[in-house]
Length: 250
Image 1: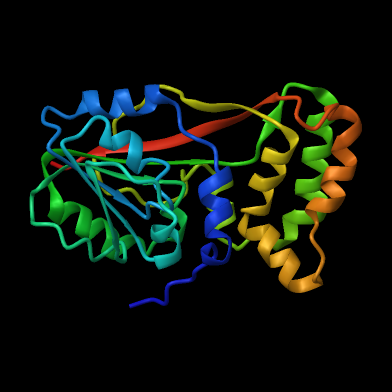
Image 2: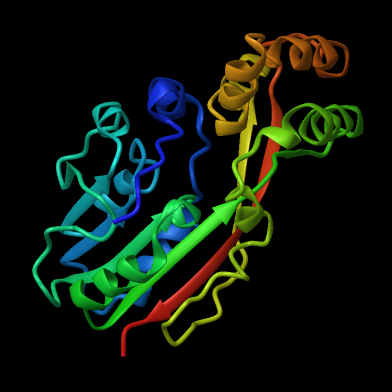
């Protein structure tokens, strides 16, 4: 069994507080794909960004993550049960799940044993949905320019190798299920500058930069954004296109 590389326990509270929320239309679409909505498994759930919306649409949700710190920081929901577990060890009964989701985490998983577990736990005709998003974007050109420069020049070298899979939209990963073409979805959030900075501090690359240099790179980002942003509590729309792969168990 491969070692679990934990990139987020040290920033679990920031992850829970500042990660963007997925659009409701995404979860409405996934629920509509499922003839029954008895059980969804949200694998590598982090602090519940997908688990809670699934709880609004399914009778029961099992949300698992290998990081105890992430699970401890997760948002509660009466129909969501959190559990510390690796992706290949859900503990679910065979043919019990209507939907399996992996939000922004497939690139961290050992795919062969995970896919075997998905095949085991999904009902025939059940759905596997995995999605990811990359860099944040702004429609304000000076803000977009600062973000792009920060990503390429300061943070870029500090992403773990798995980041390349995010940038490819998971298109280079094996996906052994008959695929369904999903519609396009995007995250759009209206954020203040402190919220954006908190989000950047939740990145694995930011943590790696700090560990290497003992300097918080977000301080320099904040200084560069102050002029184009305006008052820090002013809100601007930040956007992330989603890349999704979707399949049904035969």
